[in-house]
Length: 79
Image (cartoon, rainbow, N blue to C red; front, side, top):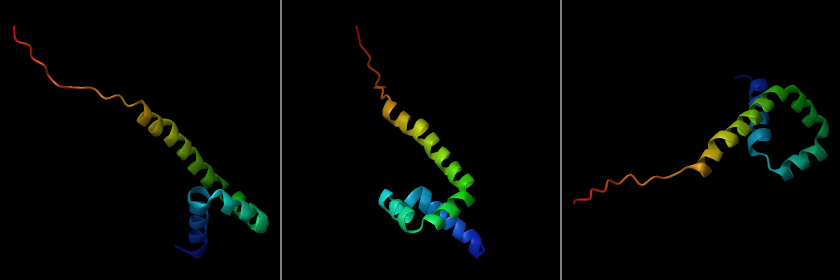
């Protein structure tokens, strides 16, 4: 992996996964030019991550809240 590929991977992970809102605001304030350049360059990859995250939240997390539990015990009544 060359340095350009490593830079790409690090930025995308930081921006999409690890950066807090405070860190993003600081980056927008102090490194606006660099941040804009990297966002334009890697917009497609960041968009894929955002769409995947939305899909995950929509499908998997909503199912966790809707899970129904059933009592599957067998009751035998004798008459």
